[in-house]
Length: 278
Image 1 (cartoon, rainbow, N blue to C red):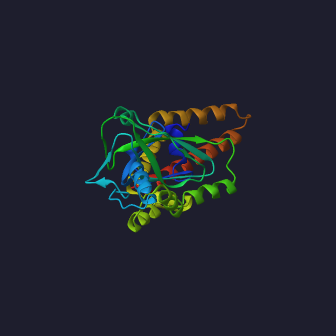
Image 2 (cartoon, helix red, strand yellow):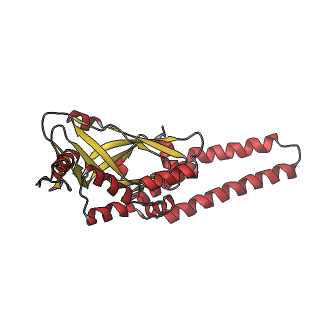
């Protein structure tokens, strides 16, 4: 499992989260939230049986979100699209897990894998195993994503298959088989959340929340490298390096100048990064 430090390292290279919300990323895990698109699996299955019996029905097989709420009846499974698109490179995979707050309501997420190369909004099944109706609000955290670094990069062939399965038309076909009716507007909304990693990285860099987060980290790094303790450490390193060099004033002065020039170059780079972050 990736730590929070590794997550920061892999952002906009191997991981893209669109839209980015710092409150949903903590301690090495990613929280995904409910969007305004969700369907009832039980409604779809019941309606399909009625249709197969050549009878009409008035069951809602479309979007069950109403007034920003998703109501899940006892024994029903809600198929909920996430607000976020999660895009992974061929070096990473992930697993989706239930949240304690969901379990406390009697809601269960059976868990789904995120394969290398995944690049779309997630479709999360939430099962109501309680005897009462449960409500999920749009924007509420519904699942936790844990990411893992692969021992070897996944093959392009396998990630191409993953991307094909995550295509919007593939989702529509699957939902249609289940008896769910997705509108054109809903399909377009889901399609907009489908990226390749390169495009997703570009979009993430434009995200204001991510830009603010990245700039804050750069400022912290600059402060640490230019702190009094760091400067003292640089001086000690230079002094020790000069002492262990072969005898000769020219050699020691040359080394001193070389190391000093290196420090100035690094400091200049950090100042440049700080100015860009403003």
